Length: 356
Image (cartoon, rainbow, N blue to C red; front, side, top):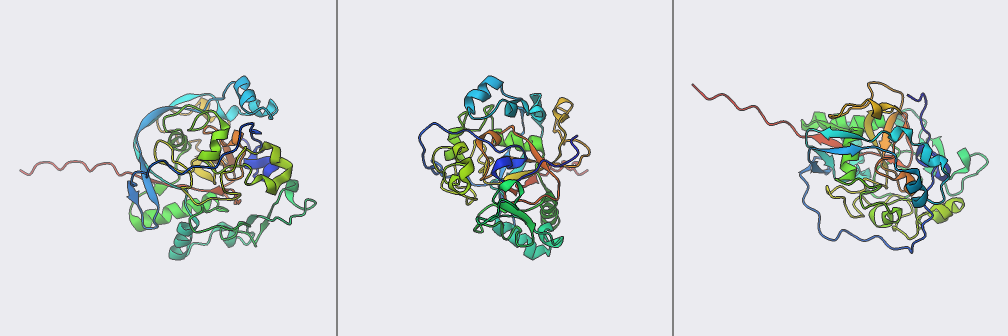
């Protein structure tokens, strides 16, 4: 177990590891809306969160792609990036034994606001008085960490203000793992259903949706322009130093996008990659995959940092893969990190014995 958190600064070290992506050689294209209306959700809760039923099933979790494949796919990355993926190995079979409801979208600003107002909960960025991180276009590289346009912690920033405009239908960010737990507990208590964060295995199973490629759409990073809100030519002008690493084309959003702006995966889930990193339930351990159980792995029993998955609006394509793992302390709050919830499906009631 690594003793400290993997940091989340800005473009130079994005998502905790070095933030790099393919310098796409293909022509740009605008993202396209879903080809057909999505199926109705299986459940909509009291905050308006729509949930999709993810079936039980078995899949191959993790596994590091061959270095030669990675070098061809991400030609601007140095080889060290491909050999620093030990926590993704080995590939191993996982069985998810029970179906579950997973949020069709990431939790939105509006839904989180409803929770805060109804429960009286004070998110950590406000409760501890230190605030969060935020984007500042007038940042001073001499005083800002690693010269990025993100600054903090400052009381100026929180889930209410990440430094850029958001609508109520954008994913909430600058929320901690503990904030996500508070939301799940409150929903469980008020609705009588069990809400929680997905396990890391459930998250990857839902993200892959039956695929075994780098992304649900295949192995070409350029496909993210149509499928996800990641670092491309829309955001690149704000980080001129990193522009060569942005995908070609524009997904239409320099910061967060309204949830559901891109086509869903085969399970009907939106934004599993991009838009906001998503907290999951597990503690992180580099060696956990070598010993994890086949059935419903829950992650290590203890640790110091929690896993987050999926990348964000600021993530380069190499780090927006289905299998990429990252982590931070449960108190971390950052304008790239949000959440998505599970609502467990109650097992069927046992049949009553026949009356005498």
